[in-house]
Image 1 (cartoon, rainbow, N blue to C red):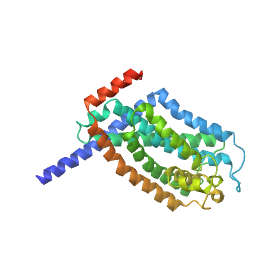
Image 2 (image 1 turned 180 degrees about the vertical axis):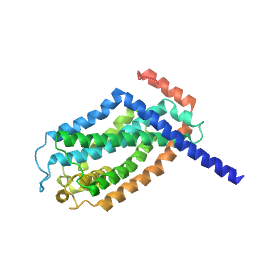
Image 3 (image 1 turned 90 degrees about the horizontal axis):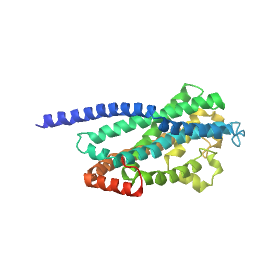
Length: 295
């Protein structure tokens, strides 16, 4: 009996992963065919290129162009944004449409759902990053890794950065109230971190207390890790510690990844358990009364 139960659980887990990958592939195809959504992501790249293109000075104390520092910072921010802004909005919207309610009746549904969303977000983030770096190199003489070691650093910082923010974004999406408030609730703190994490100007230009607060969050370390991959070693003199601190980058991002995973699955399961037909109907009625479109 125990062996049969174990095999059943294992089969459900395998099927959940397979279903999640299939669902993620379908959602990717839908995204690529949705011109409105794709234009939004392309706009972020264009804004980054325009900001970088207007800069002509060097990073203070170095011969590194500010253009390179800003593009490296925006590269980190785009990864951060996909996980902490786009993903929570997707989750809240689909909860309002009844997706979580349907998952309650599906064995392994939450796991498959998380796999699909993770695949969607990772491909979107990596594609946006690649587009930014390629367009930056072609249009504004932006930075690229100089050797195998830098390419390796770019890959592991990107991977750990996504592991740090995607589960956290899923956890946030599970508790946000509704799509109309979700953007406002996550945008303000995210923009604050953009300005205080050394992504658009050297972090040493900020007051020390601001640097210390920024160091708690993953964006600062994502940006620092990407700068180490994209900028010359001489640029590290503009860092708060005078070095890239790559072991600390890895440690902080792994800590956020663990925290995100510990929060995401229980919160999504809790959100799914709390869903009911009456709750969904009540939300749709309130949305209709407020003039918002009903799914």
